[in-house]
Image (cartoon, rainbow, N blue to C red):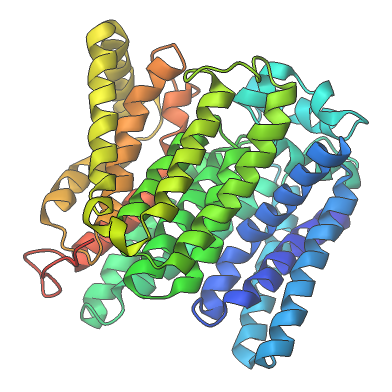
Length: 481
């Protein structure tokens, strides 16, 4: 147990240390709740470099390297900008303490959930530490399950177990902490104190009472990690652009990039977000912070790792999973950077709307060619949302509120929220065609499980829409893109 607590603490410290570079714009409290996800992202990228360049993964060396990189960044930052404040140290200690307590509780309570999918991830984690890690891992699993979660669970070798019981709970705990911080921060000064307290408490309890999201915090799969990283990516982007807190783009860009190591559909999710940024009034520094990590991770993983080792990895076709993903990443990065030029603004401001329209037309084409897949997916989704998927009434309530919010919201730079939300919804219905199989009825179906990725983002959007709407005190004109 002591070693697993040490791993949790090391992830928290490495994330906190790296985030000192953004302390001008990201508060100490926010950095506390970002620490574990960002520390895990840093470790995952170090693991990626090791696997692609060296060919194997030594989890101890990767963890030490991630911790060392974070501390080096802290040292350089402090030498340039002065020492840490008492508030910084306090919140850093809170983050470390929460990580340690979470790890102890996870080991003692034995709440880890395993399915056959979980065992595939854990088998992959055993393969990655072998001499030819990527070659040893199943060639199909390299595409469908990726290496993000197996690389993190490979640290279980250090504790003499097959998995880290604390990994999911750490993401669940720190993701919830970040959600509460966002709800508090985004409503500050916009509502009376009592109304604000009620709104924050209601949103937090709504998220915490989500049966599937709580389950995913103990389930060995990639869903709780994706939920945390997408929350950081979307919320961080809005804070960087709308509030002018440009350094929020650093954790946001890192979180977005690391999703490429966790899910096969991540390149499409990344493309949606980067095209949204492309159409916004983001500065070039924000655009660079959002795109360069994605470019680096995408080139290393899809361009070198999957291209060489995945099943069909070197197939050149727009529909090939590796080549198609490289094209999506490359185009999104290029559009995001090129649209930052002053001469590009007249047409670039419509890129996000054009992207959503294009995705909608693609979905219409899919439905027209094979309506049975869409019909089965609708039936399965409805049954999963109201009964079989164990969501209880979570999405029933969220969708009803979402439809209203999309009509009445007047959030400044609101398209940074509405385009991803709509884009994720369209992508959800398009994925059955891309993966060549309709969504199925049952809690274990992929379509049911990936809904967890978007719930926290959706609820934060609802909180913002409750504050900024055409009928409320904070209503008004949304700033143009």
